[in-house]
Amino acid sequence: MQKNVKFLDFLKSLKFRLIILVIAMAVIPGNVIRAGILNSYESRALSIRQSEVLTQAQIISNQIAVSEYMTGGSGQSETIRTRMNMLTTIYDGRVMIVDKAFRIIYDTYNLDYHKTIISEEVLKSLKGEQIVKYDSENLYIEMAIPIVDPSDDDGEVQGVLLISVSTDNIALNYDYLQKIAIILEIVVGFTAVFVGILCAIKLVKPFHRMSEEIKEIQTGYGNDSLEINDYSETAEICGRINDMRSQMKVMDESRQEFVSNVSHELKTPLTSMKVLADSINSMPDAPKELYQEFMEDITNEIERETKIINDLLSLVKMDKSAADLNISTVNLNELIEQILKRLQPIADRQKVELVLESFRPVTAEIDDVKMTLAITNLVENGIKYNRTDGEGWVHVTLNADHQYFYIKVEDSGIGIPEDCLDQIYERFYRVDKSHSREIGGTGLGLAITRNCILMHRGAIKAHSVLGEGTTFDVRVPLNYIA
View 1 (tube, helix red, strand yellow):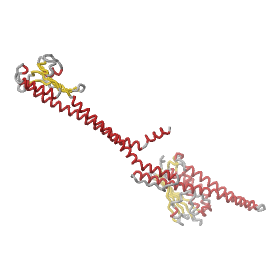
View 2 (view 1 turned 60 degrees about the vertical axis):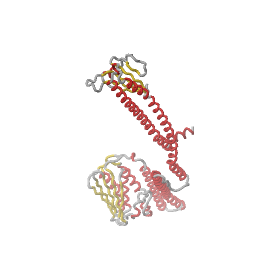
View 3 (view 1 turned 135 degrees about the horizontal axis):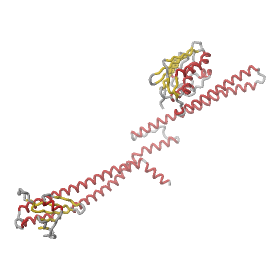
View 4 (view 1 turned 120 degrees about the vertical axis):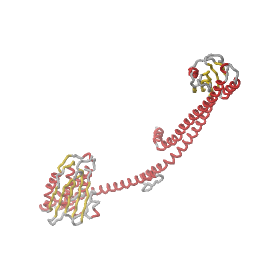
């Protein structure tokens, strides 16, 4: 069973296909060339034989026509017979002369002398038609030449010269050449197999090296990167694999950091609650007001823990396929107005002014729940991280063109350092951790926002000046792109 599997794997391998390709490139053209050469030789040899015999036949026909041979005269009879016998001997053939009465008056074989012959060829030749035929089964050329005096203006046919010549020697030469060609093909075939195997081994060798190095990397040995530059293709594949390994490394480090951050973030409220509970237990005679204060702190920590868990669940949902989006046509002007209305109490507590500016009515195909979450996070961050002197503001603008709608959330807050702008979308990342904890941030809001927008095939950019404020620009297609 294992041998069969290995054999099937070999049949599917690049090595086997290279061997077959080399053999095919050698054998198929060889077969075509052999067939072409042999057919060309046979056609050429038959054409030459027909031409030679036809020339001799016409000479004999003319000599017969100008002599008294057909009427029984003796002029040039011996010369004509000698020439016919020579033609018979040279070309291994037979010559017969037939008169107008269909009687054979001469036969080089002396078999049908004075016999009558009526055939299609004789009838046509007596009408002046010259006939040349090749019988491929019996291997002979047959000719019927009308005997006509060239000087006779009437062109009267005196008789027919029938000639049959063998083509056995052409067939023998054809067979001989065919045997030599087959032997050469066999030699070329074996050579092609040998060369094909060598080429396949040589060409596939870098891929085997690549496979072995990948195995070593998987087991923790070998180099940190693949470098097989035998071919441009292997170099390119190695480059792609190295890039993929680097990305996987970054993803693995990010995952470990994420797990560490999640553990820390979930553990911190629990630690605070434990400290508060231990403090209460250690003071059995503490006043009621202190108990209430501690219980309020514990409630706040529980709410904080709940918010972290809810944000984590939102992120998990965002990581799923965009097929989970519930797309519908939504009036964005009304949606943003509702969001700002819900956030107004928070803005009032922070003494931050909320302003909405809509340039035109905008309707788009979106998932209103997820888009609401994204916009809410941006506006809420603008409120929370704003000035505390009562002069803070958050401006939200809505605009659109024929293809996209644009949302800008601009605030007068504390700002973000320029070197931190590329990291603000990372999970649990905080620019100012102490201030974030004071206002209850989890470090997940912008990660959720970015995922929401990307699921809608949109884009988000941040611009900020430290101490002056931050601007988030969002661009999303009006029509959802599946």
